[in-house]
Image 1 (cartoon, one colour):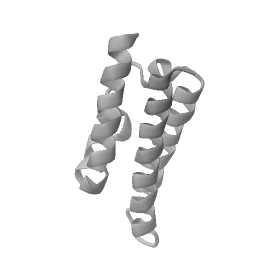
Image 2 (cartoon, helix red, strand yellow):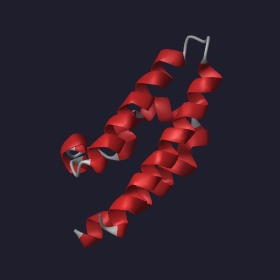
Image 3 (tube, one colour):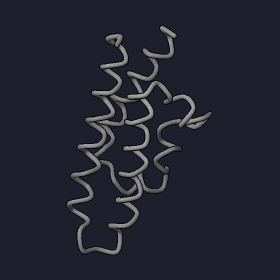
Image 4 (tube, helix red, strand yellow):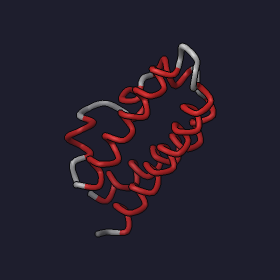
Length: 96
């Protein structure tokens, strides 16, 4: 596995951790289901990257579009992890 692929998977792992933290905060609230759905989408990205199919999974969408712009606007705590992922995606795309 190339280093860039591993870095990309680590960035996705950090995003998953950030979303899981948001999910824990949302337990018992009406917003939990939206956060859980965002977590599932992030998990799909992680497993797609692990199997070399991230571009297929995302299509032409950005990570922000994939996770949902509305959800992201309500959860600014995950933005550092998302920005890290976006940076790794740019590096990965440049080397492809």
